[in-house]
Each structure stands twice: as C-alpha cells, then as structure tokens.
Length: 369
Image (cartoon, rainbow, N blue to C red; front, side):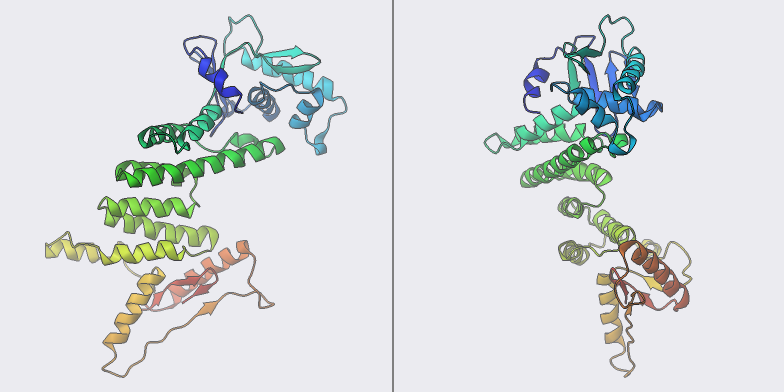
C-alpha cells in the first residue's frame, strides 16, 4: 500500500467530494456531512463489493478477481457477470446518498471491469494508520516525534479490519497484518513512553489496547508496570485479580510467571493508606456474606498455607492439601472447550461443598488445589 501514501498526502481535505473511509472497527463512507455504514443492515455482498473496490482502488482488477472476492467457491453464480452487474447497480443506488448532486459515479466500468472512480479523492483510515506506524518505527527520528506518530496511529485503530467481512479470504490476511501492526505499535510506544516516564500516557494507551486485544498478556503486563510506577498499586492489584480470573475463565490458562512475579512485587509494597481503625475494618470485610469456601489466586493461597502451617506448628495438628485434576475417560486432558466447562463446574462444586474456612485456588488450567 506504500504507493498510496503520496496520493493521500496530496488530497485536499477541503474538497467537498473527498470520501473519508473507515475500515477499522466498521466500514463507513463519509462525504461532507453525509455518511453511510455497514450498520445500515443492507445485504452483505453490497458492502463487500464496495469494501473491495475502495481498498483496491489503485489496482487493476480483472472481472474474475472481482467475482472471486465477492462469491466464494461454494456459492458461485451461474452468470457471475450478470450477478455482479446487479450488485453494482444496488451499490450505486446506496452511494447516491453520499453526494446526490455529484455528477460522476463512484463505481465506474472501464476496460471490461468495474472499479472505484480514481478521480474522486479518498482518505482511508487504514492507509494513514500504516503510514503513521512506519513513521513511528523509524529509529533514526527523534523520540517525541515517533511517540506523536504512534499515538496518532493508535487513535485510528478502532478495531479489526472490516469486521463484518472477516469471513472473506481477502480480508483475513489483511486483518491479521493490521492487528499485528497495532500490537507492535502498542509495544513500541509503551517502551518509548516508559523511557520518558510518561506513565499517564502509558496507562491510557494500555487501557485502550486491552479493550481491543483483551487476550494480549504483554499489554496487561505493561499496564500493571505503569500503574505501579505511577503509585497506583491498589488499582494494579485490582487489575491483576481481574485478569487472573478472566484468563482462567475464558482460556483455561494461568497467567505467566512474569506477570505473577509482578503481583508478588505489588503485594509486598502495598502501603497502609488508611490509619483509622473503622476504615481498616470496613476495608477488610467481604463485599457479600460468605457462603462457601474461599477462592483466591495461587500466590495468595501459598501465603495462607504458610500462615496456617506456622500457626499450628505448636499444636501438632496438620494442614491438609488436596489436588484435583480433570481428565477424560482415557486419562488424557480434555479439549479446551470441555476443559473450561468442567473446571467451572468443579470450581463451583468445590466452593459450595467445602467449609467457609477452606481455601481453593487454580493450580493449573486443569487442576484445583
């Protein structure tokens, strides 16, 4: 897409016919104050046609390429040329809502195929996003300029590329590319912000990124580091506890040793901010009346075990530890979907069956301790 950057930079933003195209998080076209988007609920193939023509407007496409992009092998039309003609007619009708007074068509027929009208200036978010990421990645440039370009790029990334067409073969590869570019941009700008001790900006970037990429553990790790560095330890601990539960419930996995090590650091350095005894007692109370065993992170479980072991050392009593492992009938680990369901049921059963004074934790994705 590199050749498109020069064209984008020469577009006159004051031109009332300029089409502003959004492809990240949704597909929409805006001209002046008129806007149409794929949220309007029309036939998917009409939107898919416009998406393909706009994002490939600088390429010469054959009729075969166009029909292949719109119809997959399982739904080939007996008369693809006629089917495409009908689809173009419907798309042109929809596009008239962008600029009713415009004399030229957005979709033109040239050299025996349809294409987006190249005489109409377009500003496409994904092209600006890629350009800004490339500028930010240039290590020869001054750091503040790189940070500025990265932050501007991240503002453009509102979600995955053409999400409502994510099933299409030509979208899949590009979507993965832009998602990877986004993750690299987040990682790079976080590193630059960290070096400048700009922790508030670092937190803002990470909090936006974990909404878009909730399963990227590295982003959560950076967020925790920034919260700790900015003195927000309580918020960091709360976020850790949230993601520990989230990763376990959604993926059936434990957080990495690196993140769990950060949690140890957090809990060691928590300062007692409340000195009034009534406030402390209120802070220590559970939000709801306890009805079953106590569930916690494994790091807390270890500390509670060690405390119990110390307290009963003089009496000769024992601390009993049990490990429950989930296996299928053949003794193997179940597939991930079945394992997640089984572990959720096992956790609920353990908490309901054991005493209030008993402690339960996830030891691994398939084990409770």
